[in-house]
Image 1: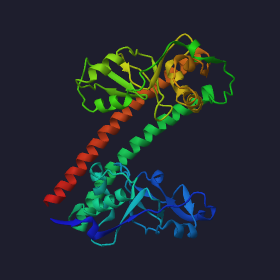
Image 2: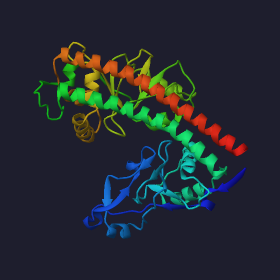
Image 3: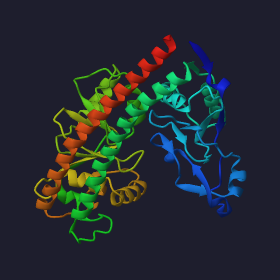
Length: 388
């Protein structure tokens, strides 16, 4: 079996950079592809376009059709081939295969199978150069051209299945967005004129979680050793069963912040607006830098409240609230006003939400299984290729 270095059979080029404020560079006819355009397997357009002048100013070149494009920070689904000439931004790289003995789709599928080993950051110039060296140094098994095409076709079909699964999950999310908007309107503008109530009248309990222990806690989380089977929610995201010997002190702090099924937890450090509802009775504790509230189910549903607290209204209000206060406290949080539709209408939405959550859970499980099977199929295909 013949092996080749990717850098020996292809050119690897970096994207360029362009000042968004220079109007003479934008709104032209040349597709300007960035990481947000990279999805699926092929690309034939972009969200932004640049002029010929912009292309020169960007220090980028027009990529020929059939170039293999990937983000600087790679994910398994993010390796595409362009069907039209494009220029790429600095957050992308391109592999240009010139040899007639190599099928571009085969190289694309090979890179997709290897992306978990090729993750890198493009924050610094030295890291960009290092990423190029990593790509150039990859050993690629090179069976005859016909076999390359056969392998690429099989893997492309498997990858398409994964793509359809992801699209269906997005449709489920979009459907819920539409239903919420139709039933309640935008919480920011409140077009249906729902009465607004402060959280202190909607929640049986509001509690600010531990403050100032997050960095140490994140460091301790890496050990993945269970203590009393407790789990923690940090910044609105669940982290399971983490501890060390030193964790006992942190655990002693967190034990004072127990969560119950139906509690709404909002992260107030990092990305504002991350929010979750506790849906299982598993002895969760509220982790550092969070606020949790226990809704009064007679007047407000947790799922509805979490949706409002994840939206633009809450984000803008919380940012002002948290930045203006030296110490976050329950009084500040309690004074946040929430549009409050009739509880019966909220319950109708809850039923729809639960049905969609059940469907989405099944779809996610199918996607996980599809991704697993794709990776196994890819590993098997290239292992057979290497052994041939």
